[in-house]
Amino acid sequence: MLELNQVSKNYADVCALEHCDLSIASGQTTVLIGPSGCGKSTILRLIIGLQTPDEGSIHFAGQRLERDSLPALRQRMGYVIQDGGLFPHLCARDNVALMARYLRWPDVRIATRITELAELTHFPVDALDRFPIQLSGGQQQRVSLMRSLMLDPEVLLLDEPLGALDPMIRRDLQVDLREVFTNLGKTVLMVTHDLGEAAFFADTVVLLRDGRIVQQGTMEQLLREPADDFVRRFIQAQRSPLETMEIPG
Image (tube, rainbow, N blue to C red; front, side, top):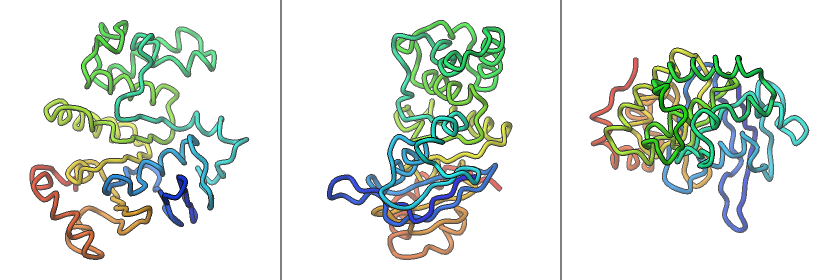
């Protein structure tokens, strides 16, 4: 579904991503993990077109991401960031409907789709007319998820979507998110710094360090066959949260 070929990205003198090769399987959840500044969020921003690679190419469903093709391809991707990115002057309903209205969907189609998404994400229908400041953190992230799903995209890109939530709300939303992924069968690429969260969601885990992929595979492979000492130390530093999380399958 997504393929990065020898992709590099630099910010001034800092190398965020160096000659990265990565294939994202269709219909599965791939989780990018690693320490801060390792390049995982850069990968998402390059895929969605917020930034342009200095070298290499990115393909989506076989089509290269370029300036001319990007607007149409963007509509086939959903994007969720850590704080939700909701417009504060728009109510939840209008935040969700933003792109559909831009594309001039009929009002009936918009209303039907929002009702479907509210049910899917367990968002209370009576809260759709509230503004973001009137919603809890978990509700704001559900609105952001609904907005990302509004156009029924083929790919979901999630950049630490649960990182700012308190543990209880985060756990509830983790369960609901995994249910959404399972029910919809979407291709999902998620960024997290939390190994336990990666274990909970991922079919494939990709561990990065200093802009390079260190190891990728199932969580069981990372645990049982770490590629080097960095992988061992990264896992060991997070053993406690891992022990409290379920590894699917």
